[in-house]
Amino acid sequence: MMASSKEFPSAAELREKLMHASHILHHHDILDGFGHISVRNPEDPNTCFLTGTAAALITSPDVFTEYRINDGQPVKDGVFVSPYSEHHIHAAILAKFPGVHSVVHSHALDVLAYTVTSGSASQGQSNPSTSRPVIHKTGFLGDSVPVWDIARAYTPEHEQQKRHLLVNDYCLGESLAAAAVKPAGQYPYHKVVLQRGHGFVALGDSIEEAVYNAIYTVENARVQAQAEQRCNLHSHQSIHFLGPEEIEACSRMDRECITKVWPLWMAEIKQNALWQ
Image 1 (tube, helix red, strand yellow):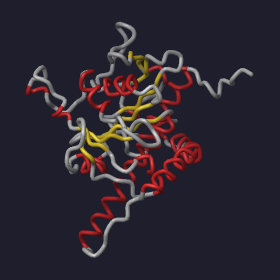
Image 2: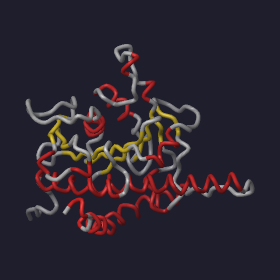
Image 3: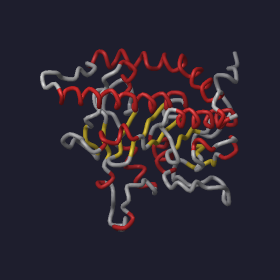
Image 4: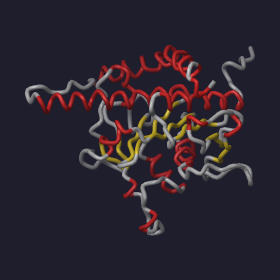
């Protein structure tokens, strides 16, 4: 029996969904004038689509440029190339993890504090974050969220004046992608990696999952911050994080919830005058 087109969307269909996803992420304050979302090309998994237009200003699926994932360069010469230099983030992550099909890069304010308050160093180029899952919709965060520090990835070729924390070359993108490697667990990679003093990336096996992971990473940060504030005010209180069994159960449930909430998010952006 031949699979239906619903199971295997075309590149054109995914570019349209990428436009809607950009609007959803803007609506939820995940993307503003900066940040972006990408998707792997279903017709050529060695390339991906990404735009340099601010998420809220995307009005057509045609604004997405196709990039090679093996070097982060545009497939066609002379095409519109993102003024945002961090397309290398998306290319390198998609190249390293064949199971990842979409990546969100965000600078959401609620998460930033957790990028600069990491624990002691672990193996590789990442530290364990102080960000941990506290709500049932964030089992995908796992028991720890790595924090990637770009300072450890700079080489002598990165001149001092260019060390502005932007992942603007493929070498830095590969270093960030390596921080997502997960030695054990339900998935072979971390679904979220924080970037010290910069933001975070959320990974998904679909556009919907990457969007879900990004939105609830921010919600978890908001709840955790409020809980930490209460603990500071009431020293006898402590934060009850999700336990290992809860993380496993919630991470499975998260995937089931994506299809429930996506229609609502689509309805919300269709009612927004910005995208009429």
